[in-house]
Length: 199
Image (cartoon, rainbow, N blue to C red; front, side, top):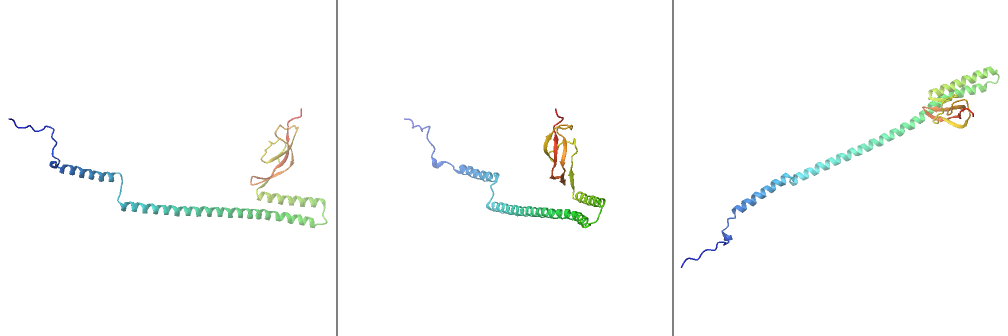
């Protein structure tokens, strides 16, 4: 009688498995995990605290720079307002100083009771020259277009359009002079605009 055969698909005894190899593999995986954390940039708590303090310091610096910039803008705005106020004040003062001699001349002319018409005319012309000098010193110019000059709506004001020998769209006649000061229109010249020759 032969000996019984051992089963071919028998499972090994779990107690006899060597687990030292599995422990080495797990330790290697843990070591690799630590390396992965370092690879993706995770830092210890001390580094996070340092980064936070540096960021807070930078934010504080930006905030201080912002406050300084706002203060500087406010100072510039105030200086500009002061300069505009001074320009208005001294601009008026300069023009007034230029007109004082004109007033003196007019009062002197009215104070003379016995004078000829020629002397009166010469006095008025001298006063007009003083006034023109005052205008020139303060950059005040007259706008007096001649017949045939092109109509300019920026410095001319059309009263009407009339038939004229002048080309259409030009000044036919100036009714009242205009004035500008430093290229700013104080009063436009009143003109009649040519509609061309009458049909």
